[in-house]
Length: 80
Image (cartoon, rainbow, N blue to C red; front, side):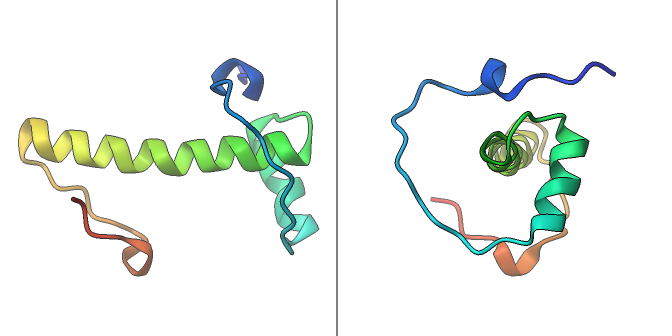
């Protein structure tokens, strides 16, 4: 499977500097899995995947009435 570069999937959005306390090991593992060139690209791609998962779940439910079991129920917000 060919890895996409995060710049190919990112929308040209305004960026702001932010600071988070994250596990360097977890970022490195995610970076390897995603094939991202930088930690910032890794975080952006991971966030894109979370949003996509939510959109996919909502789309399946709306189109086919197939609710997707949420493996992260504590993080689920109600849809409006």
